[in-house]
Length: 310
Image (cartoon, rainbow, N blue to C red):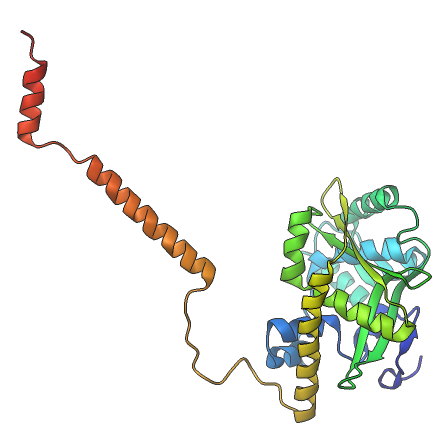
């Protein structure tokens, strides 16, 4: 393997995930941070050599699901099954750390049946030819024509003719409305636009993009989504701004925070709407209380006299 910093733009097959993550290039996750946060946060999370590595077990199932479906020939080589119910004991924690250090993916033994069930559902529900054959886990390394910034992408699956790219996502739910919200929360559309751009530059082929989303909860439903041209156009504007910002900060050697000026803070639209709802509810409640006001003593005496027997 050549020195990572000297890799030329191109398409690379079989590049291990840990090698890909070590490539000194701007990634989709970095672009998402630049868009949602600020350069200072980006530098700390993606460039600071002393930053602590986050270690969240919730991603283990998704990572193994990718491995089992997209790279089944590497299952035995890269998967380490931890014979424990949780990472509470020191032995389990040490086994997981050792697997990570070796560039492998740890998985608690109790999750294996879930992985196999998810794979079986995918096998049964995916349309013929989708995510079968083709190229899996392919790395694209390319340079932005405007700024010269080197960008890296790792594509889940590419059709042999380069006309279709599929991104496999695991989520708690594959419900369409849930994934629509997740696109915005996580920035999946930004990744799609970035990957499509790099793919066209390297292959000369404009591709179609699909998301295959599978629920990690039984019965592991599968949904397939395609971004609209409008969604990709919006993403293109944000991606362009993020690459330009990265280039500017890199050239200046400065990674500023949000702002150095005093900012006026007002209510966001949703808070203003809630305030109006509460105000209306208070007015309505006050009106109800007034309509239920007890009668005075004269009214009570007249009411009693009217009810007295003859």
